[in-house]
Length: 545
Image 1 (cartoon, helix red, strand yellow):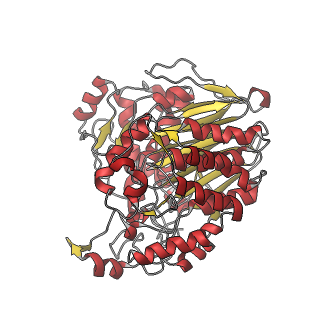
Image 2 (cartoon, helix red, strand yellow; image 1 turned 135 degrees about the horizontal axis):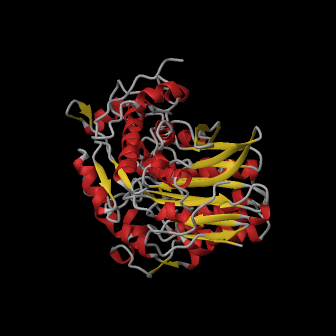
Image 3 (cartoon, rainbow, N blue to C red; image 1 turned 120 degrees about the vertical axis):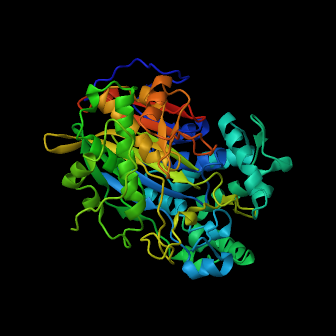
């Protein structure tokens, strides 16, 4: 197993947490909700679902009952992947949006907020699939902590309050938003008590009737009726026909370990491509926070995004396969394009034919869960179904309006997705062993956070909390670079000297992401348990016993 340097060279209020049962989330009350299930005798999946339900209440800026989800579950012997991202309403196509919004610069206008950005919510179906396959406690038990928090109320956390206030000006006029998320006509302040009785009522219905009630029962009827009232395309049939899908994870070897991601329609493949490119270089020979190492990682990430933005879509529409994009010979050729002396504006290659929360949970029986759910941009679409607490995501804006794109909007199709859980294993004697459950939330920052964290841990031996706290950079879609203020000033100047365009952060929600990590300390001695880290960029907590 990797031996870490347990020192942390970066300013942080967090210390690594050691325990045999751990839940790590971006909000303390959600972590504690998960621990309650472990105390009751539940497993890591039970804990993850309870934490996921709770965090829809305490961090509504990031996720909600109308969001999407993905998961990677290590059952003790094997890794399972779950895609619970929703599909578009059957009535959607380019002409639908052209009729409603017209064209601009040769392409149909595409809304980022409101009902016409809402795909079928997948998160509740994700909880349903996880519970059916792995859960041990009754589903109603898993809803108890979230119901209690929603009914009794909670004091709003610091970073949640900041992001809440930032979203209000844009979303205050969306249907149902102000009634739920603007008590007293404004965003709540830090420590202000908020209650969500409608949210609690929906959770109680899910506890009583099961998660399918969201898609087939009274809850689904309420969603469909509100869509009709607002002139939106989503119907009861769209909801009724939706199911989450179990999928085979994709992976790439790196430094004697294997990194696993969910396959497209998500962007997890970007992290694998970048790691596959970096694997061609001796990264550990370069100083961890200096220009040579950071430039190399940035260029690998740019190469990965050049391909991902060109090819990734609903897998039924892709013109190349993930296997082709991850082909080692192809990545070797891509690696040759990196110039160590200057920044390059890469184009996509030609592979040969052939608003988010992340959480992790692990139990002493060896089950580990890497789980992510999201409403996408802060509060998602801004649409909230009246008296239900159901805040709907805006994943529909992940589609393209270009008819030539594999990601073009069509009915019943999944859009390009940003949220991605990750997992790390190691081959020991021909058998895969679990090493780490991890993820980094935050739009396009997610695969970049995966890359930077893995490099710090596997190439440089930094312990998970240090790798989490280290300063980050972010490659934007125009290939400019955002850098965190804590990045070494000399390194920042050197990046500009190589030709990188440094751009100020103009998105207060996505910023540099937030990670949670649970690392298994010793495969030969389960009693040692795990070490967990929680990102100080959020209000989070890693807690265990």
